[in-house]
Structure formats: structure tokens, C-alpha cells
Length: 511
Image (cartoon, rainbow, N blue to C red; front, side, top):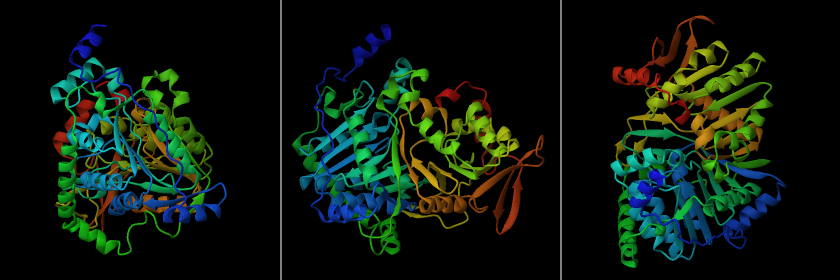
């Protein structure tokens, strides 16, 4: 009770704020893209169509083009929407769509919204745009000290975040996958950039994505930005934002990054135009938003983990796992090694210590490496910089790469792509979503992504010098020659010591 009083005393969030429920608009069938998509879907009864977004600049421009083509509605749900070059570019296209009369609903997790809150507040001032924050802090723009204090006093709630990622346009097309909105997710960052995967989807699965969005949009944990007391953006703030975003978009168009997009994609992005699709039966899986309020025993019926496990249970030949944050735990380790024992080839791609952006996660993962290897699981860890030229960015050239894609392929037939890592946080704390597709051609495309990523120029192959009791070693290629390391490669002494310390801390359940 004392905690509640303390939080209430400093809160500017109105718990009694009355929000208006809304639902996804019916699919737009009279538009040019709507007619094309409807005709394509009619040729594939009970199947959905997909395009795989592996190139980061294509992933960005697909979102931009879809916003530019929108006629009726855009619904976005993201864990992170940064106030940086690409975030402001997407915001500018959303604002332009709203000016044309398109209804825009933007649902963001509040954990990273502070830096963009003024921009989001100004967007919300547009009559066709509404912004809501999921599971927000008690104050609109908490300082670091305030945020830390609130987190300590209300950790059970605030430690549970909305990690979902979807982008739905006109009820006809959706982008679902691992990317947030921000420079690092589109190869536009000046530091480390993320390797990621998204799916562009058309067909029945889009309706399911819209339904999942509505569930979150209307849930008790989603608060309109206007639910915070105090001054909010006015019409004049919106006018100024429109000017600023237009200026920033023009500046962004002059960058090397924008020129690289034109060079690589002379015919435009694969976001919304006729062409090849991967077709197959698909299921959208999404945790229920109530998962953030449930205890561990009560979350099973609210989460997607059992549905994904049902897919991997069917494996007869091989299972490929891509998970940047990979902490299988005792149960997961037994499960994966059990698959290997019955003859299933299990291969896992995750981050190395040198490429991860979360040392604590690597500390959790490292506890299970030996048991996984001794049990027959093949481990690959992404190198911080591949043997190929780094991407041109808005600010120059990126210094390295980090894995962010989340995908599973089973027997070259079934594929999961989404937001879920194989770690305790994704399983029990965060809400997650993704798509399971039965399509050998799409499975092959993701397998090719995996096989390219695990090449010795791009990843370390972690092995044992002997099947049991041997030393761990990391194999890679340098200047065309095999190199072998006997401890986590290319990581600083400081980072190794940090991981050694974190391994002794009882924090795995929060990772």
C-alpha cells in the first residue's frame, strides 16, 4: 500500500482517463493495391502470401511506400520507435498519410518512448492520428532517476513489456517480424547495425494481425498520450513538427544511405507491387496482452510458446534456430539436446560476446553452451563485423553488426518469423508475436539467410576439442585461412570480466 501511495503522489498518469475503443477498418478493396491483392489472394484459397525482407534498406522503404500508398488506415505496433533519422522519416510519411485522410493508430511500448514523446504528442494532435502507450510509467517524461525509482517500486508491472512488431496498411498488407523503427534496424546507424528479418504478408493472416492489434489497442494497459496530466501539443506544435519533419526528410534524401537505396532498388521496394510471393497456410500467433498481469503459472494459455513448440515437436530432420538473445535454460537445453539425440540436426545462430548488445544475456547463454554442445547441438555466433563491406549509412559507415532476427525453420517446411527470442523474458515477461507459415520455398529462403550468416567470414562455429570434457573453441576464417580461438573472440578484457561477474548474479529470470 505504501508503494501505491508513493507512486500515486508523483503520478501524472490519469488512471480514470476514458479512452474510446476502436477497431480495424474493413480491408480497402477499391484501391489499386487492394484490387491487386484481392485478385492474387483469390488464386490461393486459404493461403497467405509473403515476401521476406532481409535487406534493411528494403525493409525501410517498404514501410515508406506502404504508407505512401495507404488510402484508409495504418496501424503500427512497436516496442521501439526512435526519434532519429529513419524514425522521423516514417513519422513524416505517417503524417502525410493522415493529411490525405488516412486514419493512423500508433501503439508503442512506453519503455523507450521518452526520447520521442514530444514528436508523438504532436502527431497525436492531428485529428486522424492517435497515439497510445503500452504499460506506461507514471510520468510522461520521466528522468533517468525517476524512471529507475518507479521501476524499483513497481518492478512486477514495469518489467513486463510489449515486444510485438506489426505494421498494417488498409487491412490488406502487413509487415510482421523483428525490426523496430530506428536507424540501427535499417542499416542507417553510425555505430552497430542489426541483422534482421521481416515478412510482408497479404491474405487471411492480415485479418488476424488486425484482430491482434485491436486486442492490444483496446486493452487496459494501453493509454492514450493525452491520459497524462499537463500541457499537450497544440495545432501550432503540429504545424512546426510538419515543417521540421519535411526538412529532415529532405536532408535524409541527400545522404549516401538514400543514394545506396536508389542504386540497389532501381524499381522501388518490394512493399506493394505485383511480383512473386511465397504462398502457404499461415497462422498469426500473438500473446494476449493480459500476459503482463499474470503470474508464471497463469501465462501458458496467454502465450505463443506452446504453439511454436508444437511446430518444433514435429521435427524429423532438422531445426534451425535464429535467436539474438538465446538463453534456453535447463528445460530448453534438455529439449534441444533431446531433439539431437533422436537424430534431428539442431543448429542455432545467436550473437557472440563481441556482437551482442546485452552482456547480461550472453552471461545467461554461456551457462548452457557446453551442455548444448555435448548434447549434439551445433552453435554459431555472429561475428561483430563480417568479411564483407559494411553498409553505407546516413552518417557514414557502420562499425559492426549485431543479430536481431528471430526465426525457426523445421524440416525445410515450416517457418516462424516474429519478435520472440528463446529466452525467459520472451517466454514469461514480454508479450510477443509472429507468423508460422507452412511453405517450403519460404523455408528455403530463410535457410539461405541462415547458411549465409554462419559462413566462417560472418560467424564463429563453436565446437569442443573432444565430444565430452573437451575445451570449447571458436572457428572462423580470416584472410581466407582458418583461425581458432580458445575464448570468446574479439571481446575486450573488460567485457569478459563483466560477463564473468554477471554469471554469478541471480538475474536469469529477468533476461
